[in-house]
Image (cartoon, rainbow, N blue to C red; front, side):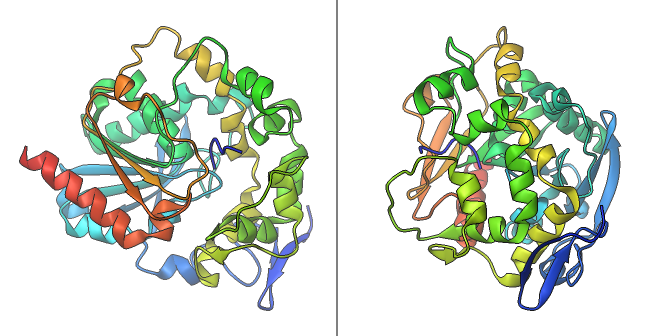
Length: 348
């Protein structure tokens, strides 16, 4: 989740009689390829790229030559695109859905700097090279959108079209991002907390993996006044969730299984590179010139970009009546918006 306005057999949670324990690549009761992963989601392959291995899910390989790459956010998984994959393949796209470094069965380097935008975008470029593609349409949600924006800035010739959900283009500004957030939002804001107190949130999330993800993946949340302290840590420790679930129990089990196995540090390391990314982008042309679709959720807490068209002049904006987990909250509407826009671009 990005930019909100506001070893033994250690149990990490339980639900419906299943105990989720750190026992290896699968979790007692539900394995990564059981439950929701069987819902028309492809089997993965592991591909060596850019010095790491990525777990990649593919559909529509028969449509070779028309690639579309779907990039998940935090704390997500390639499975977050389960609703879009079959429709995009049926529409004639070669759909490529990686678990990016730090997630699922992809590599999890130990060095924090191995998760900066140069490495994350380099993985996607190398993935295109693996398949023999000069460029592709890239779709990102949340942190995945941040990676797609960065990829497009650093490797503009490898990106044909951009579709991003929730997170708009983030202006670089004169002050490093974490420094600016700390000055305005304080040390408890989770971006800042992840950087200033490394390992603290990671441990809490790992101790409450099921509870944290169950409480996080909600919609129709009631309005509430901001409280002091770390909101995400409080969320992980809350016994009762608010609002309504975004997904079924079996779908949620896929995410719980993955993070019970991997922990959260790999994904959180993406946050720990924000100021490094700010420096890496210092001399890069800040304008995104590719045709772009920006999809917002009207109930999302992520702030909309006030000057989006200044930095992304070829952007079209769509809004859906949902919260942050756009492609999972309103899957049919999200898929329809993506396909309609792609059809219009191809016809132009």
